[in-house]
Length: 79
Figure 1 (spheres, rainbow, N blue to C red):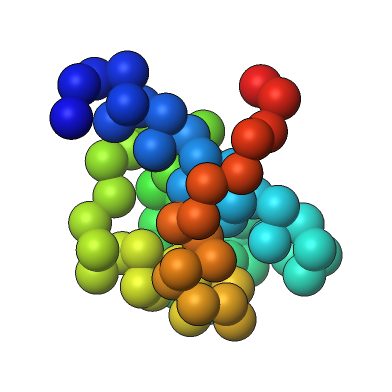
Figure 2 (tube, rainbow, N blue to C red):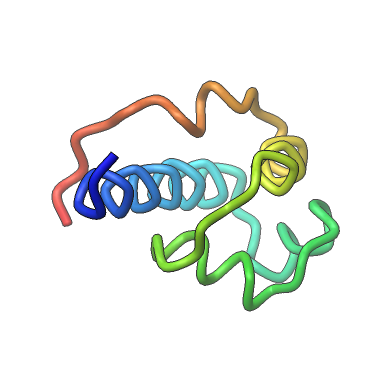
């Protein structure tokens, strides 16, 4: 996987995560509490600047009350 594809995957995960968080009407701070992760980490993941472990992805999915698949599936967001 080249860097462009890797970065695109990170951005896609982050955007799916952000869209779900906004749909739940919760803040990054609330999500960080639910997922047991630092607020700055949540922000980095949403912006696609953090390489997320599978364990952290699972925590985020649980915090967002959604399957991990929903956060991983590709959406064509305009960025």
